[in-house]
Image 1: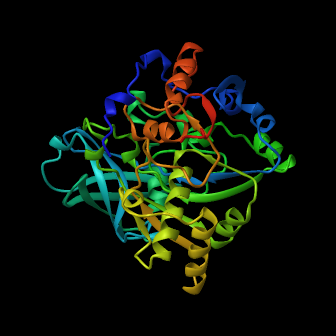
Image 2: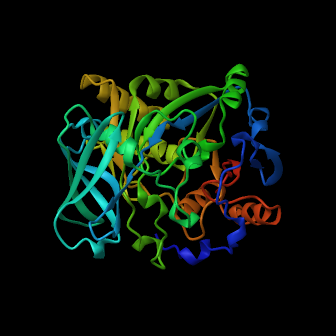
Length: 401
């Protein structure tokens, strides 16, 4: 892959970055791109733009309050940003721990934490719980931190919910506020585990979802837990030198069957849903080739011949999962989707407007080709709001050669 990241740069003025959400989710602007044509809408009008044979696939991950504030006896403030559990590694088990748990973390103001444990108090009802944090070892992304507490009536999930702050994106350049607790979360979020929201879903309201269902649009949900790496810009000049982050996903066999048997349009709600669907395709290909198929590496799609249809690939996953006696297929992915990659699984995507020189913009370019420049130029000229709390778009796949 010989792609210069500088070819995916554009001027994003600071005033075009949405620092706060709109007062109403579904009143954001919606740019519609199809067959080279662009039109402007409001998100609440989305159902009017979709054929009746549409299936939309959502990511129902839930953002956790992953930023835990501590204070040293000297008064120095230290923030521990929980990225993923290390012991136990299973998210559900890690959240359910009632004595101690180890997470891989990033630590703010680390230079002030020389030695010894940190301590803070959490009030839950009339109960005060002391939470301790101590360093275990260095990790590639920061530190492994052991959290411990003495009251077994409370799980780490409950402590995190009471103490933690919502991890809003760093490019907003502000502290998280009360409004973020609700608005940096989709209305259909369910499976906790993300440290960043699948932001394409932030525009949906229950009213929009009801309208979609009434007009016959099929709605399916999968789970990919979004990691902090989603914000990491591509710093290498050549995209081939960028190392992608790994994220974990989970999807029920029933949902796999529903997606496999759908004969109409498929639309991914967000880049995380699309990354999961494309990873499912390659998992099915690897399964067919009798190779390990529960992790999709960054370059797997570029080093593997994929001649199967999406339906055939899903058949392989469905059969393998059912034969193992499981109700869900679980895996992880570091897939990079960039120009030259052919999207196998969807016809369109609902997505926000992404940072310059980001892997998310590379993904959009793989879907619409060079048209991304026209789309983003139109959005900038017409005062669309950008990034996580910004406006939305419905982009149909270009028929690339």
